[in-house]
Image (cartoon, rainbow, N blue to C red; front, side, top):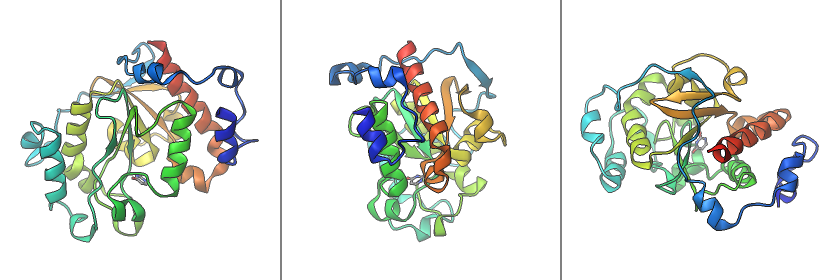
Length: 249
Ligand code: URA
């Protein structure tokens, strides 16, 4: 199965087959479902970020911090708080298992996500799904996926700091509701904001950081991997790192 995925991704020479991975059969569904034996070891945590308040200090943050899933989705759908709202087609809330152990955080919706209202459904999303499958994670079963901002930045530009901060209470509430034991930040925008750093992905990856007492790892954004396929090998190393963390506890 691993080999098929690597082939389908067209990664064969780049994603070196790792003996442990090649030899380890995928766990049965029941075992995967148990990956959520929440609590990734914190002994390797390298970057203890300053504790941030459970909600960003923006108006409405406290209200959002008490919402249930339904209220939160409704608040996102009705949100008019930042300049991204008027140009969106659909808000892109999040998708996946609300009790997942692993939560993936991207940057913001692109064109297809804006049209469909679901994160990571375009080309980058297809690559993300393949990457997740390679470590037995699946948006339909055992991972939750969301973005820093819930509306598409026009022309796929990066969201601004202000837009991210306006939207942050929604993400923070999603994290609080899911209670993941591992956060995965995809790409520079998510990593920079969640860890409050300008450090490059190259330096942040392969380490366990801390986000409000939740272990957080950083890896390349799949859209970047599509543009820079030579980095896929490193991304594969990061996926194995994630899988090791999940197995460790
Ligand atoms: N890129 C992201 O960061 N998020 C999406 O949902 C789609 C593309």
